[in-house]
Image 1: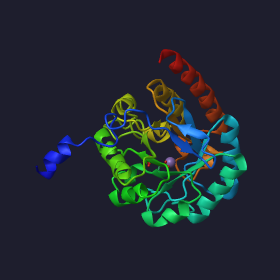
Image 2: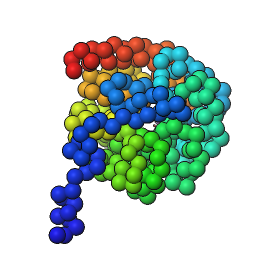
Image 3: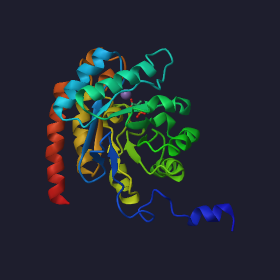
Length: 281
Ligand code: PEP
Ligand code: MN
């Protein structure tokens, strides 16, 4: 049998056929946060860690509003090389400190497998949209047991996202969370177009948890809550939201950052939608 024929009949590790029960990922030192168990997990924080003070202020605000995971980018994949690209290792140390201060597990993006050892105290490693098909990075993360949040590339199909997740599972790491963060379409009025179809489609095709990122999908702060709520109605396992203590001064993705107050309103709406969704299940 040729390799191609073998590939065609092989059941993907990401598929529901090979793993009928939904994967539930346990996060944090005490493993007391479960992602993918039917409840909604809310992750929030700034696009980029800009300083210790900015991160701590935002961390206390998102925790008070009900976030369950603190996000913050230390290695930023910027389109222009002349824009703020993050504090690197120093930023990760602020994130670990802020997570401990407010009692939340933390998530941050990795761009290079050579940085893996810097992520030891990070609870979830994010692979950004621009690295979805960085296969050597995916393979390295598969050889590590840390939970990975894998974002869909702006120009990638749902099946390509699943193949990328397969690279991680195939190496032995079952802890993969998928993330829909918008795709590029002909519509220029928003940064990207949130692919709402992707949520129920992924939930039907795979046992892996599916998170929605309406911040990058829209790029416009006033659209983040309505699109986030739509993703909950469509069945996502959680939200990833950019929040800044002072959105107007954000060094990265300022237009899509929610204020702590707007985030708090999003969380209360999200919890209402979660309850309604439970009734209709
Ligand atoms: C981010 O989460 O800050 C980010 C860079 O997102 P994406 O990879 O979806 O563009
Ligand atoms: Mn961002």
